[in-house]
Image (cartoon, rainbow, N blue to C red; front, side, top):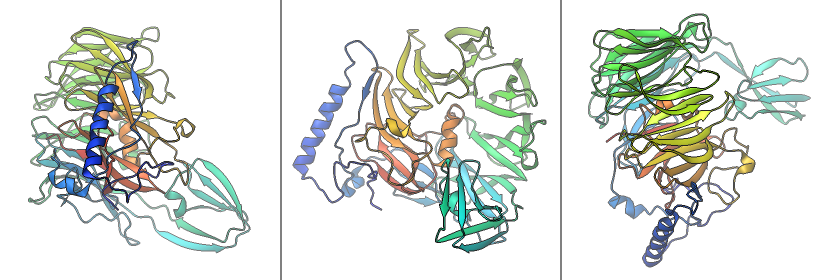
Length: 542
């Protein structure tokens, strides 16, 4: 595969064998800069401006990689389940793990790595190793059955034979889950995979690795029959907080199953701080305090908001048995304030800036529904979206300027997830998009085969000018889709932006189910490039 990632779109401005002379490329670069400068002007009435991508992009020349200025490193979860670190060009690769077995031989457990999280100084990676039993499988080849009904969808990968209607598992349908049912008469052949069903989680472990790969992996802890869903470093790099769930309790709703735990980055015994039906949190900049929101077991919508001291393992309540219409709270970057909400009154709640101990100090907005918010890295702005109903696929993107008191609408598109650039100038946004809404000449995903279930328009918005540049249509990988669905949780610990705020990285499902890691300039003026197969990618903070 070439370095340049050229989406299999309806229209390609340039073919892969085209080359520009140095003079033509220079003229084109000047034109692109001029176009960008013109596009930065606000519209006459001051409304947010939607800016379509340039029809022509500069290619990624191999020679230029030698002189390209690097910014940080990218951790990649490879498609084979292993973990590696590369630079923004895909070079300087460091292979951190090699023993993943996502497709092991029969009777052996699968082993894969996930949830890579960079340490605050960018020198180390924490990640989760998961081991699971592989079900005992028998494969049958059915030749010319009379009729086969194929059910596709997120909750069904079954095939029913027309005669005995025996329900079995189809390996063929695990690659692409399409919400439709088809009937095929007299197919040439059907491959059937039957499972005994005795599969399950064996163990989870947290490891720490040096980013340069020069030190052996360090196992911090191992949990038997327990899943780890999320982890992040304390700002001082001394501890890791993580949530875990007993595998035998995962399907039960009448008991507390999610635990918020702490373990030293040097290893040792873990400590459980709090538990409930769910647990989300944010570290204070002091590295010693967590602001945690825990949903009460058996009481839907009822939560406790607490300050947890990780030195004494004590908790002080900010709100007890409250209905709080947000997922993840957040401290300000300097640790002196927090973002929370009030309980709904007559269907409306307030988004608040509160003091460190939870006392309301300033109301930012009143809303109806559920809010997701993030503080800008410089602490001067708050971006938020409101989902007015549980079925809403996104909300209008707002930015509240804490100095001027102005609440700006940045985009009228329904935004489902957003990520601040490290310099607090731009937001990377993901807007759910129906296939029929996609522009015909808009570069993006491959639609030559099955229509994907989930498509997002990836855009970059300048928060001061409110200009939005739509870059690509993408179909996220399954792990990345999970990150987007809980972005206000995950963006506390992961970053899709380069440390210099000039480039972005994101994983996509591309061309018949293959997974790729894509790196792009944030302006979209240059063709993005593939960093190779993978399901998740995270840029280092430095």
